[in-house]
Amino acid sequence: MTSTKPNLSFWQIWNMSFGFMGIQFGWGLQMANMSSIYENLGAKPEDIPALWLAAPLTGLLVQPIIGYLSDRTWHPRLGRRRPFFLIGAILSSLCLFIMPNASALWMAAGLLWILDSSINISMEPFRAFVADKLPENQRTIGFSMQSFFIGVGATIASALPWIFTNWFQVSSTAAHGHVANNVKWSFYIGGIAFLGAVLYTVFTTKEYPPSEEEFAKIKDGKKGLTAGVNEIIYAVTNMPKRMKQLALIQFVTWPGLFLMWFYYTPTVANDIFGGEVGSKAYADGQNFAGLTYSIENVVTFLFALVLPFLAGKFGKKWTHFICLLIGGLGLISINLIHGSEMSYGLFIIMGLVGIAWCSILSMPYAMLADCLPENKIGIYMGIFNFFIVLPEIIASLFFGKVMENVLDGSRIAAVTIGGCLLILAGILTLRIKEEKIAG
Image (tube, rainbow, N blue to C red):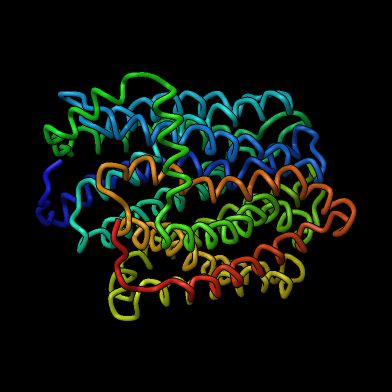
């Protein structure tokens, strides 16, 4: 990489971020559909968190390793990060084609494990890619552009089951133990979109070659696994102060999101539309929840267009605080929706969540990138993911007991707790100091 990075044009930033839209097809489809797929295959509400355990465990293991390896990779044609984009995209697309044909809970959970591992191989280097390619003054724009494409991809992915049912009359119901055809076709389209979007970035974006010093480190980094483990441990124990502050914010933010992903769609299908698993009312509620996820993501990509301006005017921490507050209040407001006749209020609720989601996808990374040493951005971005996946592991292992013994299986109560956690994370953001911290 060059020591002085030139400003890139709008279209160069567009091209380097486009692949993130494909990655979001993978995340968006599972967020909107996996809980319902699990229930269709016989899972009970208290079983859902444990069945989602694949995502955080794979992120915890895969992302720091991929970050370390991508810091020390250089391919003469594909560069530093793009080999990982490509490998992850191929594997993820294959999983998306296989997933909706799962016929048992263990099969669906196992496929989710492989899918999440593959998505993480592509996703982590994309975060480091922004810091690699852009000078400091353009990084907020770069991460916001990723948020834009995340919003676009998730909008389409979340709406696909509804589109197939309402535009093409594809069935949205299936016998117990099977996945409905509208969901199947959504996953097939998602697999094609994932690979296509990543290939676009791979072929349209170049990477800066390493300096002689960095190239020597790349060769040195191939000595073995022990050196990599030691460096990961060293990086964890020597995190910059700002990274520690941001880590706490992430540790509180993401359980709020996980509870939404665990229970929002079943809440709409069961509590608001009044359906039981396998009924038409449940299927209608499930499809409607996917449509409201699309509205969330429309707001995400539209808000990404103004987020850099707001961050420049009010500061990154105040922008993030306000966005988290708005999203938390939105989730709590689900308690105001009673019956399917009021279901259109869910569009407003998920629109508010979309504002928070846009900021979550960009502001923490923009605040983090400025305090990281240039030659370790990949590994630190991977470690930063610890504070996303550790709380999800905790939630996956223990929240089922909370659902069963404290909340009496109330899905809507779980979503409400998620909103409260977003508000708490927003308050914690105010502890961040805005000035740049030396890496």
